[in-house]
Amino acid sequence: MPTPLEKWVDEVAGLTKPDRVYWCDGSEEEARRIVEAGLKEEKIAGKPVFYELNHRTYPNSYLHRSHPTDVARTEHLTFVCHPDRETAGPNNNWMDPKEAKEKMTKLSDGCMRGRTMYVLPYMMGHPKSPYAKACIQLTDISYVAVSMRIMTRMSKDVIAKIGSSEDFVKGIHSVGDFDPNKRFIMHFPDEHLVWSIGSGYGGNALLGKKCFSLRIASWLGKQEGWLAEHMVIMGVEDPKGNITYITAALPSACGKTNLAMMQSTLPGYKVWTLGDDIAWLNVGPDGRLWAINPETGFFGVAPGTSMKTNPNMLKTLLKGTFYPTLFTNTALNAETNEPWWEGMDGNPPAHLLDWQGKKFDPALGQKAAHPNSRFTASVYQCDMLSKEFDNPQGVPISAILFGGRRTHTIPLVTESRSWTHGVFLGARMGSETTAAAIHKEGVLRRDPMAMLPFCGYNMGDYFRHWLSIGRRLKHPPKIYSINWFRTDENGKFMWPGFGDNIRVFKWIIDRVNNSVGVRETPIGFLPHLSDLDLSGLSISKEHLERLFAIDVHESQKEAQDAEEFFGKFGDRFPTELMEELHGLKARLKGR
Ligand code: GTP
Ligand code: SPV
Ligand code: MN
Image (cartoon, rainbow, N blue to C red; front, top):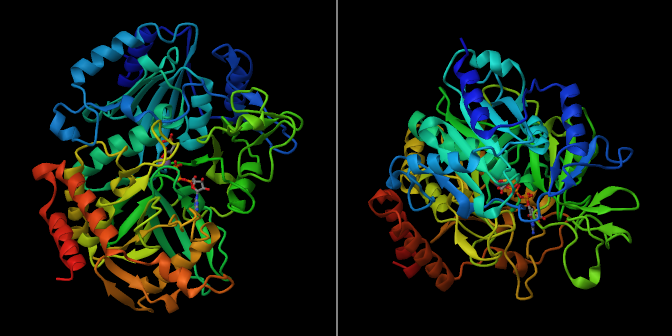
């Protein structure tokens, strides 16, 4: 008797008609073979899936050039198919599940012909964690198979764990013919199923990542009483050796990987990495909030990563273990056979190929690496990985940070007055858009909790869920709003950022330990500027004041914009948060 898993794999193979079906075991030897297939047999628009890089300087590293139309998440082609539109909410594209299935079935008929279907068994979360989930993804491209082996705990043990159960997370993925008109990323939350066709890119194709661990998991979390969030998890060790665990939600390409790997500029402070993209948050029996990172890899933005901004990330990339390191859509130094991107070091090298493999001509004024070019590397290559990384229970969280790219209005750091006010600070978040998804860059959009593209259900209900989690916490984390991106009249970032962000963390830890006070303002609690440790930084008092300046007119406009956004959720938007908004408006008016 075939198991439900075997039956499902057979059914999908019957529809997609691959030449071969290959069940992965997650071994090193197997990874080498799949890379080999990507170097030689498999093609994308007639070109290889992988190119070998200089293994002397970049051990076990490969370059992947995607299809030219397939360079970022495609939010407009991403659907959450709840039985009714209301449950998906105004924050999601919705399609009736039956209609979506019919559409995908039609598009998938024979879509794997001539290819291998890889069956990937993996866990999101440590297998011993009570919060972990057993998953199977089917894919027809080596790049996704190898990436998933880096990003998740892939092992044949997962097949044994699933056994004859029907209870496993399903992902069907095919690159199809990369036609953007036939590209869809469909979620069926009630069936724990993601079905994606037409793209091989990151969040569109690594279905354990955003599709399952955020969109579907957020829905599971709503039903089961936990949260799936777009957050970095880090431990910050102080000079006495105490470690404070903190999570931070920032929209795509707004600094999570950089926080996760922060090289502190304050003596005695050290950051330990737990995750750079996704946190699953559970209320522990002790009434604290506990976080695990369901992933085991970094899929990080390459441009801007340098020995100056993020030395720990570069060291991780160069470590070279039996997990391969992948570079996607970076430029290539044709002389040294090494990857290159803007902001890595100095001027472009003389013999540079751009992300599509064409000779790079700086005179054309284009970037050599795609702005959303990325690296994929195992967390186990990271020297600053927290010793708690594999702890099945996770780590207890003392502070939650909400931030975005805001050139104006939002101060460097603001403390919330309560959990509810903190949820309000998360709900009113906005950020200027980046290259991580296909849309116009640099436009301010509301992005509550950095989850707008990833919340798998109505965000009005999501805000209520956040409030209900707060009610169950005996020791709730403090909640902060942060902003590293405020600019001056010349458009220059006013805060040095990167390793100097530790100065804000030090203040937050001092607040968690109740060792410094705050000043009350209409928008929340701000630091006494003298409590910020700016030793070794040359920053004038006037400059610092501008980082914290509250412009009443701008803040009123901000509140107005948030109110319009909240209005989209109608009755589902919680009154507690509307009261926070009214309180803010009244305080800004001086009442
Ligand atoms: P996703 O992987 O897309 O979810 O993004 P992420 O939040 O992990 O973003 P990442 O850390 O890769 O940041 C990407 C961009 O933000 C790069 O261009 C960085 O140079 C820039 N960045 C990160 N931290 C800072 C900072 O403190 N200050 C400034 N000015 N830029 C920063
Ligand atoms: C993001 O866009 O937030 C990412 C990259 O982390 S992707 O995996 O493509 O979603
Ligand atoms: Mn992300």
